[in-house]
Image (tube, rainbow, N blue to C red; front, side, top):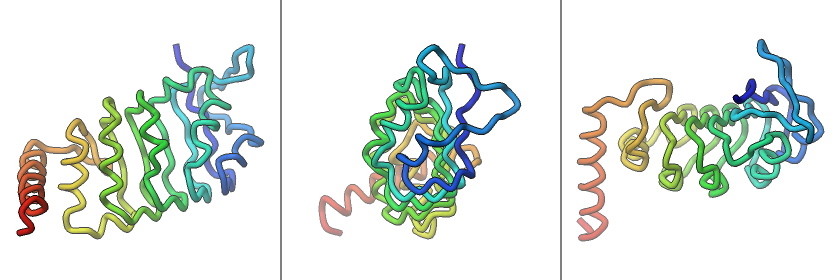
Length: 177
């Protein structure tokens, strides 16, 4: 059985390496450590900090979690992240990813997350990419397994529209029209 989320939110963390010196906040469920002083959790909260990049994400996950490969829920919301780093694609068991309230500005970087086979929930609102008129279609097209996006259900109609959008954009890119 897995334990409570490891909560490193509101710690004024600027780089993920800074997180290693922090003690997780206590939640409603007590945090327990194993004999290696790691937490038997599948959830990591790093929200509401000032993290700029995800360079040391794997090391940070390994530092805190007893089974880092089992990370299923990652909250990176309300930081200063500007890119969807490829390191996120190494989190193969990730199911929920919160990236809202950051500074992500390249919509095509969402495509990278298609490598995550179990990802069913994502938040990206509050980023510059949200202003792109193709935002929702692009994300749903890139992540067809999504059930929830920006705290709202992905509807059957949205899936159809995203598929049409993808096909028309693929044709435009192939022909130049």
